[in-house]
Length: 172
Image (cartoon, rainbow, N blue to C red; front, side):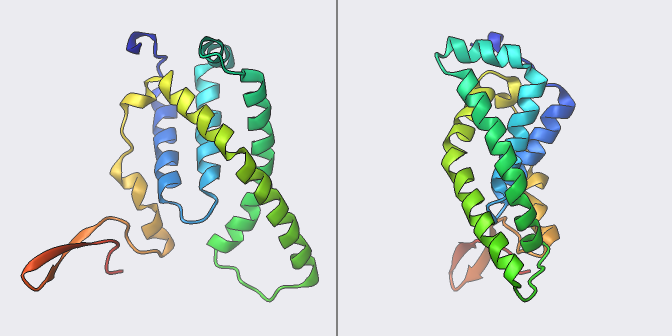
């Protein structure tokens, strides 16, 4: 099976691994944005013909998956603008227009949630058919939250009486 894996270019591989680190670190639902970015990059790098042929070998419907990915890209692009404001901590008094936008956001976000399973299935398939499965996400990709004001996500040891306890998060 490994001899049939298609190589992912080094640059695309680095970008995908960085996106996956952010996907794993993200606390808001914008995490799906990083996953879809990874899927889009892998499809472009591996080539749609190759991906389609592998889907056919696995008896999966590439055309349906492709349509779902296109729809998901549109919905995630709409939803991401709302999460950007949350991440930037822009909490102003709500106006009537913003309340209407919130309803639009909730409706769009629910559509993203409905398509997440297809996204994960596509991601797992792309990993199975590429050399990306042999690579490890660098540890510095998981430290993205430290730069946005959140606590560290790496566990550290803390003395408590005679025993040691592993505590989640850092002191910051």
